[in-house]
Image 1 (cartoon, rainbow, N blue to C red):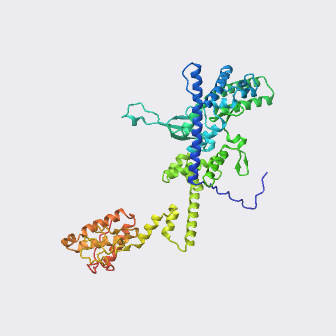
Image 2 (tube, rainbow, N blue to C red):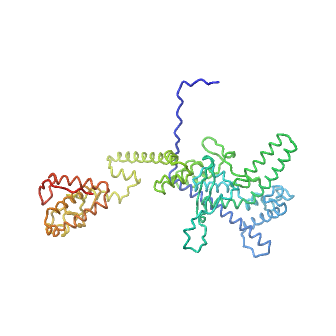
Image 3 (spheres, rainbow, N blue to C red):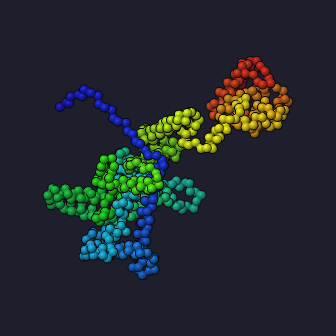
Length: 543
């Protein structure tokens, strides 16, 4: 059945637009997130030390000294370890941990099931901190990082090296870099890479490798449960069990398979093995425009409370996808605006995708910020009753005008200009080498600023005058006797002028300025002091 045609034009799709937070706020988020990750690492190191003390005491070795909190943690771990050995499970159930007693009895003995589990395995918050830290430093999509295949043997591997570069070494090279690689679902399974130094504890390869090591016992337990679930499913299918029961068992096996492949395992407050999966976690359902209950929401609340204590404005709410934009902006600026570097960092297949991405994020935000700064400073100058274009340009570009800058600008504008457009700090007292016959108290009349004059200040607008003087000297070189030319020091003046044109001014502007003055001298429109009018003659083009 054919549907009738619409009689109106469908609206165009909205242009995607992302508004990034400023650089300083993004830096504060990264610093605070790294501090949380280091706190997690310190907690893990302390828990590992507790387990080491337990092993030493069990083998009658000299243990480390522990404080009161350490002894309490040790007591919890010893109980948990005993239950592990008794049940043969890396993660005993809550009932098994009670060991025949009730929960109040366990609490009276100073034992907590939550604490026992956290000594050995990551908590939900620790898993979220690790994921967000890796997300901040990788530039990957959230879906790519949460769908890492923990069973892949090449998930985290040493960075490949060209062995030819080690010909002068001992042959034993310490691995300094590691590579994290995973397929990108939104790019039809294209492999994406992230490289980091092994010694950098906040690099994504280090974080993933450390997390995999921490949850290895949980993964082994999941593997056993998955094997058992598949065996039960096969028995149900062979015995033609009820379809609903078979479907439930199939879903259970598939969920265990999903957890087996997931990197970000943790132990929940109820003692179950869980894993991070953004698409299925109810904690991240939105309420209005704020994601209530998510780790990132709680993290931003804590960070803004600290900023408020220091009198700083709050940082707007961000989402995990904003981390990718922040990373792309950092790569773009660190590479000096190299779009290919951004393309490589984001894992794009086409340069057009990267250009469109930057236009919708970084470029749009930069243009809006420039326009806002210009209007703000322009209105500020209008309120002062003046518009100074030099000051306005400085404020728009750099955002500040220091008293030292303003003093330098004022003194620069008060400089008297010579005939060739250079500033002079003391026009009534030129050095004897420049004006040997100068009369004290009068203004300098030689205007030979290029003759190694210490009073000369070569300004951006001096290009035209220096080009004029160089062309005058080129003409004088052809017209004056050689002895007069050398005795007057015109050769040094010409050399200094050409050096200034080559080093101080844009290469594309110098030839046109010199050609202009050469033509004016040739036509007689410009008179060279001391030579008078010069008739038409051949001029050699300046290269």
